Every structure is written in structure tokens, then in C-alpha cells.
Length: 511
Image (tube, rainbow, N blue to C red; front, side, top):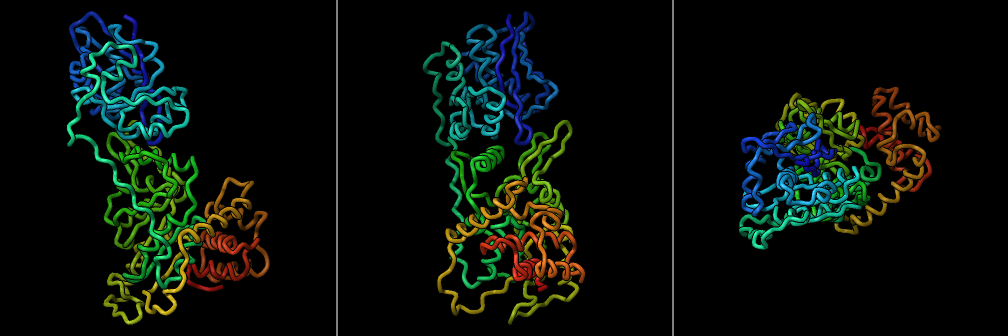
């Protein structure tokens, strides 16, 4: 008997590799064996495939059937191989066209009645298949919208195993082509994410709004400290709405991460993602992981957008220190026995905290019940290395007067226009470099490159450095912010006033 072959995709993080699914039968006692390093969920595919085939009028040969997943040395996880395994097994007795199978990638989980169920990670799987030169892909009908987002993919959506088998020449009874799915089993449409609130909703915080624009224009990380009710969360949630729209590459990456996380994807969203894990979240929830299949955590889901951690001083220090490596490298790797999964982590970090445990320290009219040691200990919960990676350290106060606060305020549309214009100026200046925003530039290039500052602006920074106000890393971050302030104002180079403003946003000091 000729060995029958088709294709599936194994995902490791966002990276996918084509898997050759080959099936053969021999003249031995009837048996069904699945080999090639399957995990537990994939190992259980044998029973799902046997029942699904029987209930679809596609009974398997009454001989020993072996299905191999190659390369055998690559770990394979999940139930998305079911459809490929079933079709390869059915084809061993000549009922399917082997050439049609051999040029098609199959993705989907099988129900016992033959239904093809949706699986997570279809979008990155289709991207991997097309990149490997296999553009004909069969997917579950519920995953069809996201699969069709991939340019160049010939996507065929099926609801049943019988429908998939007919694509390859099987003669199937029309009664089993469609499965009546119970209403309670049909997946409900995923609720659409609410759009970011308008920046014009922020009342009485003009300095904070301007600092948010600086953060958006330069891609800078932001720490907001202030009492409850000062508007920290309100400001953070409006940051995605003033960021530039995602381009095709970024939008596809964001959608791929969402797909891998099991979230519904039907179109490419151009709004940067916003993730706000609770400060009590586990380390695995933040960085991602899993014993058998690595799932993206909040860090990866926030890539190309905003990661917001409120009440950051209440979070375990180990959780916060886990942010340092992704902030530096723009990616995060999860190591498990037998595989390493990598995810993108190009996010903009926004942290918010109270000034002390009771939240009233330094508040006009407030009564703080915390001791000086408690206040210092609370502020010290954010480690120096993490705080050093924050470009803007913003202190907020509660709005105490409404005089003038009800006048004209900056809307998100107006703010986004300013941000886009500032980023275009930065991109033009950085055209011959690998960077596109001021936050990505290196300190060496800023200090010694073609755009190194001279005169009063440089003296201001060197004075702060010599007085011990700044570390060298903080010095470079102030320099980045100063360039962003100049870009927002349309200036060719930062002035001493821009440097002074950047110093204030970083340390609350002046030059």
C-alpha cells in the first residue's frame, strides 16, 4: 500500500513549522497508532478520529493503521492535528485523491460526530503554511475569517469531516455533509472591545495630558504617581486612542497573538492593544507559559500597544522585575523541556501607583496616616533598575478647581494628529538607522552621533549628571524625551527649555 501524505502545522510561540502527516496500513491485527512525539491532547486524537470517521460514513480499514507526524523530533501539541490525521487515515484504502491531500494543509479539531471545531492559533498557522509555500489550507468554518486575513492563502472552510473528505474526491452521503449543531454548542460572537475613551474627557489635568502626548509621540514608558481620584487610570486608558494606527505588519502580529491566545479574530484592528493585568496576577499570566503549550501572557498580548499595571506598588517585586528583559529586547522567550517559545514584546509600559499605602501623602487637605518609613518603603517597591527604564515619572494631584477646566480640551483626534506629525519628524531624522521612535535610540548615538546636542541644552544635562541627579541611563532617557518634546513643537533640535522640561518629567527637578 502506498503511504498517504498530507500536512498540518505545529506552533511554537508565534512560529509555525509544517508537519508531514503520513499514514500507512499493514496486514496485522487491527490497531491505530499515532507516533511522532504527540502530547497528551494530540495522543487522544486516535479515539476522536475513529469515532468521527465512523459517524461520518468514512469507516477506517480493519487493519493496523500507523500515522506518523514528521519531523518526529519536534514536539507537537494540541488538537489541531485531528483533521489531517483523520483524512490521511481514511485515504489509506484509496477513497481519497492522494495528490489533492499532498498539496493541502489541514487544521482543525474533530468532534465525535464528525464536526470540525475551531482551534486556537489558526492565523499564525496559516501564515506559517503560506510562508512555507503551501497556500491551500482547510480550516474550521468558525476560523475562516481570521484565516482569510493572510494574503496569498487559498482558504477552504469546512464544518464536518465528511465535507473535508469530499474536497479530496470521497463519495459521501449528503446526510452527513452537514452536522446539526445544538444551539447551546454554537460559539457566541466575541464581544467587541470598547473603543478607547476620548482624551477630551480628562478634566483639569493639562500638564498630565501634555505628558501623555510626549509619551505617545516618542514611545516612552510612563510612571504616574498620585492619590486616588487623580485620573491615573483614566489617562492610561486613553493612551491607545492617541497612538498612530497600526500598519499591516503590526496589525497582523497583534491579530496572531490574539488568535494564539484563543480570542476571536475576524478582522485586522488598527487600534493598538491595551492590556491591564491586575497587580495580583501570577508571573505566568504576565509573561505567558504552560507546561505543554506556551500561551502568550499579558506582555505578548500588549505588544504594539500599551501594558498598564495599576497599583504597581502592591505587585510582587518578582513580577515587576520580569518586565525588565522584555523592555530591553522587545521579545520574550519561554523555555520548557524540549522547546523554546518566543513572543513579541514591543509594548509601551504605563505604571500607576499611590504616593503611600493610604494614598494621602502630599495631598492638599489630606491626612496621611503613614509613617515616613512606610512612605519610603512603599515607593521603594519599584526597583531602581525598573524605575530607571521609565522615561517619564509624572506626579499628579487631584483636581481642586474647575475654573477653566470646562473650557476647550484636546480631543483624541487632535492629539493623535500631533503625535503622528511628531513621529514623522523623528522617523525622517532616524531614516538611516534601525529605529523609528526616539525611545528606541541608543544613548551612544544620541550623545556622540550626528545629532548630538551642544551649547546650553548639553550643559543643562551635564550639570544634572555631575550633581548626581541622573544616572547615565537616566541621562540618555532624558535626552530621548527632550527630542520628543522638540518634535511635538516642530523644532529642528531641542532647546535648553526642552531639556529642562524633560528633566522635570523624569525626576521632577530642573536643570
